[in-house]
Amino acid sequence: MRKTIALLLLAATVLLAVEKTPSPSLSWLDAPPLAADKGEQRILDVLAEMTARDGRGDLNITPDDGRLLRLLAEAAGARHVVEIGTSHGYSGLWFTLALRRTGGRLTTHEIDADRVKTAGGNFRQAGVEDLVAIVRGDAHETVADINGPVDILFLDGDKDGNMDYLEQLLPRIRPGGLIIAHSAANQADRMSDYLQAVTTNPQLETRFFHMTEHGLAVTLKKRLGPAE
Ligand SMILES: C[S@@+](CC[C@H](N)C(=O)[O-])C[C@H]1O[C@@H](n2cnc3c(N)ncnc32)[C@H](O)[C@@H]1O
Image 1 (cartoon, protein in one colour):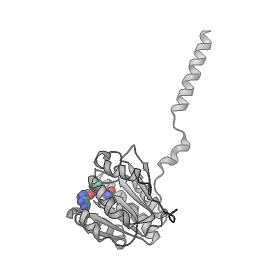
Image 2 (cartoon, rainbow, N blue to C red):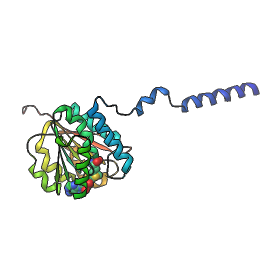
Image 3 (cartoon, rainbow, N blue to C red):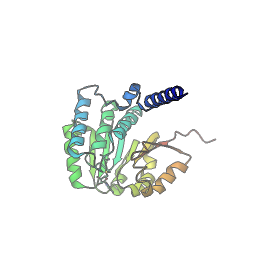
């Protein structure tokens, strides 16, 4: 009897150990971004340098967020991405990985003059300065000058201003375009009016990603058919 119990305990211990050991097949979850050409490598090098130099701090999105932004921008064939909140250009650089292949451009708005300067230097170092226009000033005012259809609007400035940006810019987003709000998890209380608006408008579809980190609210402006 004692021998049987001991064997059962041993079997249970082995099972628990197997359960706890991460499967080697999940290693692809941490696979780093791989450069397809020298241009991509140059941008990825600057991103890595920025992380090493400054740490993530509070000013930047995460690399996972950046990879998702690039993926969405390239899949959408984005020709015009508008960003609110340039900071040092970290998220902007992720967008340029897509824009150099879609023939698109980034217009990024920043209120802080020092950050405009630093971001400009980072875009030049990455060789993507021709793809990016930095607009200095209060974006609540400067977005009034945005022309033409916008494929992706990335909101990462003053979070309590998101509702105003939505009201001003929704008409400029092309049908099928995206509005992406950063910090939808950790700063949801600062944008609750915005989150309410994008989840209750039948002309929009919103889903949430990376919500265990800062959170991204990704909103599709639906393509609408003729009136029924
Ligand atoms: C969280 S940081 C942006 C981080 C950046 N998107 C990145 O991941 O690299 C927010 C930025 O928005 C800027 N900002 C805040 N209010 C603004 C406004 N009204 N107009 C333009 N920029 C603003 C801040 O100066 C700051 O640099």
